[in-house]
Image 1 (cartoon, protein in one colour):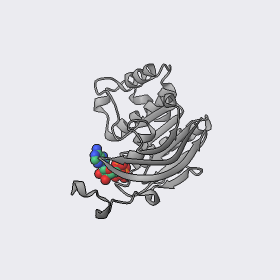
Image 2 (spheres, rainbow, N blue to C red; image 1 turned 90 degrees about the horizontal axis):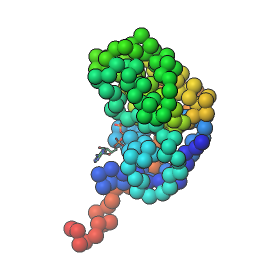
Image 3 (spheres, rainbow, N blue to C red; image 1 turned 120 degrees about the horizontal axis):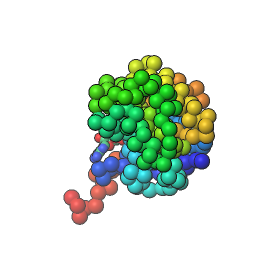
Length: 205
Ligand SMILES: Nc1ncnc2c1ncn2[C@@H]1O[C@H](COP(=O)(O)OP(=O)(O)OP(=O)(O)O)[C@@H](O)[C@H]1O
């Protein structure tokens, strides 16, 4: 199990944001993406998750192994916490939600309608979804937003268990997750050069 990126360029809205990215992540490893607001971390994660195409370069990963958690929690408000997780488990052909409930401190909230959860509880449910997918490659965008320090520790422990079990994780975050062995990739050096006025074709001026 691995994810390999070679000379990758990514962008949004017609602009190249990052170019020349080269990295690989293997089973058992976590890669933390860092960089200022707007530098392109979300865009990179969306490309890795195959939600949008790369502009250039190569991405080698098996799509069937990907689990993406973006800014939206993807929670069904009318269903209970347990029903949400059971739904996602079934979608991914998995059984059993107890470990996900325990990992994210949701056991007591299992019967609660998800729409009534607090922001941090919703986020924990959104992250617990990853566990029930049974997928090996977690792509996580700002996973700790709304989480208190105890919940950040729960999340870090869940990621560590995932890595120990042979999974891998790529995580965009501005905070220290407390994952001692995680590698850090600062995307800033890969920032694409903006086109100079002289680069524009006269026909378009
Ligand atoms: N749908 C879109 N259309 C055009 N531009 C976009 C779109 N989405 C994002 N952008 C722009 O792309 C750039 C990169 O955004 P991105 O969300 O990838 O950055 P980020 O590094 O994840 O930022 P943050 O740390 O704030 O989450 C930003 O300038 C942003 O405004």
